[in-house]
Amino acid sequence: MITLQDLHRAQQIIGQRTGIVIKEHQQANLAKTLQEALEHFSIPTHAALLDLLQNCSPNEPVMEFLVNRITIGESYFFRDAEQMDFLRTVCLPQIIAAKRQEGSRSLRIWSAGCSAGQETVTLAILLHELLPDLSQWHIHLMGTDINVEALRQAISGLYQEWSFRSTTAWHRDRFFQPIGSKWRTRDSLRSMMQFTYLNLIEDAFPTTLNKTEAMDLILCRNVFIYFDQKTTAKAAAKLAECLVPGGWLILGVADLLQNQIPGCRIHIHDRYNYFQRQNSKIIEAKPCLEPIPHAIAYQKAEALQHPIDSKSQLIQLMGAEEWHPALEIINRLPIDQQKTAKILQYKAKILANMGDANQTIDLCHQSMALESTDKHLYLILGLALLEADRLNEAEASFRKALFLDRKFLECHFHLGLLLRQTNRVAPGLKSLQNALAFAEKNPPHWRIHNAANTTMERFALILQAEIALYAKRPPL
Ligand SMILES: C[S@@+](CC[C@H](N)C(=O)[O-])C[C@H]1O[C@@H](n2cnc3c(N)ncnc32)[C@H](O)[C@@H]1O
Image 1 (cartoon, helix red, strand yellow):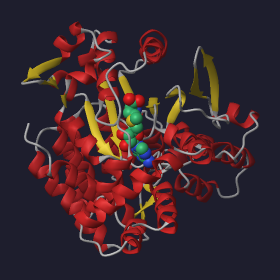
Image 2: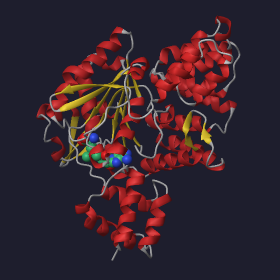
Image 3: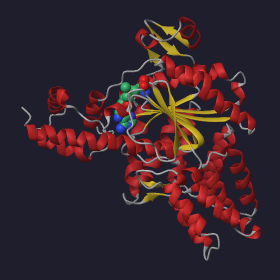
Image 4: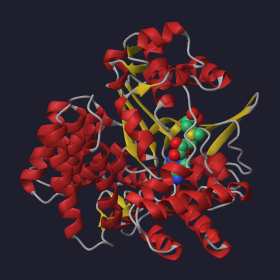
């Protein structure tokens, strides 16, 4: 029998590691799950189990066991008709129209807390309907979750009839094929989506490392309902940072936020509040609960109108991932300084993080023309080429970066994801394993160059989770 003290400690650890609040009426179930974990993994005592859970990696089997049982993965296609109408008739058409106006054919959409991918699939179907020229678009449609079992199902694309309770037979027959008593998403949808592990509490975002930057739309529905107010406010603010100015954050009807999200305009819409990211100047004008990094950085940039040493300020801002003010500093440099290989590279990195793939590619080439052989430049170019759907060129650029430094772990990682995305799963896993081997050789507290908030230790855990997700994938 677990003691009340151990049970409370378990609740605390779960809260810290996942954000999930176990309520009083769920305690009996939690006690039962912990007992099952003890027996399943032959752990001698509850205290030993809790010590393990406190610090272990997310893909430690006992952690997976617990997370798979305490998370509630209830989801279905076209969940919540009112929100679907808003997406179909207001939000997505507005985003698409703005893109067309600026001559862009790129969309970046994230379903955070996607469970087995029903929401991500719904988004893919809506895009099929709204974009008659879909094949000319680059769509980055990503689903993330902490429940590995749910993610494996999302990757397999297999669903039971129950997931279709809000789906018309027309949609089901057009976008799914029957496999026995189940249905599988057709390739036209599956090729649009990527599913990956991301913990909204423990992982760093936005960053190009996990492709969470410069999002046009984020859906995070029915996830915060399990968190407390403080955790929700923090996670919502981080999600908002991932949006481009004008980008939308959509929460579920029950994901009540008591506070405003820093930097976002709130749209009151029937039963819902929708959030739209403003540009930094508007952020400054709003009173907020917590200091907003971008606003502070903007003030820093303003103070730098006559900089004594703009370049070191620039590096500082880039290190803090404050892209808008960093760009302002570059744009204020004398023209001859703006055209050096290094500054062109910095600008490319900034624009990559702001989601402008075409300008990034152009700037990388300009920098390379000045004989730059910086491995990071080839990584940035590769990422922008990926974004522009120029996959062969992206692969060549990653390989060039690895030629310059074969221990370049970020590049092994992105090459691995690209190989996997293009159905070369075995070589993809090899590249991810290379990245893992190098990450594990570095001191655990070192930071990843292009993801300032991610340590080597955390990156190694992310890599282990990625490898496990596909290595244990059911055959398609
Ligand atoms: C009820 S489902 C919502 C699925 C989908 N968004 C929807 O509305 O239909 C909640 C999901 O949030 C995930 N989740 C809970 N805590 C999380 C965290 N810290 N990071 C990422 N996902 C989390 C759970 O694993 C679960 O799959």
